[in-house]
Image 1 (tube, rainbow, N blue to C red):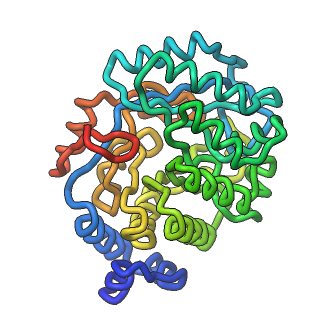
Image 2 (cartoon, rainbow, N blue to C red):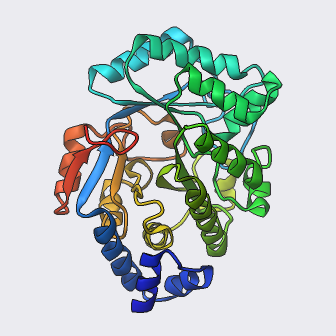
Length: 347
């Protein structure tokens, strides 16, 4: 175990090393991950005051794991989006996350118009879109994905999400999201974003039909990208929620122990390459998030204000965790709460 600990500090842990750790006593893995967390980022636990704005639930992609698509059938106007941003600013938000379904008319100009309207009205970080939106918007606009990214950056896009990654193994993607971008396309678009100066998060959505080997392959792909671009700000593990979707017939999701092992092995594999690992309270609950923060994670995510996508899939932990509740949750485990920006600067 000590040898693996040394390897992970050096950033040299292999797939076999990771599998051996996963086969070992899980509490030894948690201890290794927690020691690495303390070595790399210390005892501070960060969080961001933000709001998710889901533009529309109309979507032509039809992923098997999605519970949000056409749940109501709405599309927000720019005026409604601006009202939501204003409400977020009123409670001290520093970040807006724009998400939503994808429809054929959503070209690059569509997104640029929304971004420009927000930036013209408010001084706030726009952490928005993902490779799948970029891909379809570029196709609709008959331009390259890199040119689409440049246009969005000019319009005011600050950072991009690493969503739509799910599991970066094409055999898995063929079962859970066959109409989304391929692994190679996701990697290309994320890399292009980093190249044009748009940092991104990275994500992993686990618990459907993938294996531990698939999860490790995914994490190693993220590590490889980071070593080339240094453009990832964090890893956001997202456990699969099985209500109101097609995948619920095939998977009930994972146990709490697997949630913790995923956070821990992510810390060991990513080491100093991606130093920030989030424990998403909206996905796993605040109590489990507290435990994950003792198993390698160091960030509690966002206050959210609302997360229609997670709620539709069965998240029962509420839609909003105010800043004072974030601080209480973190302080309760003896760690130091620190409010951050999207780029992990102190507020």
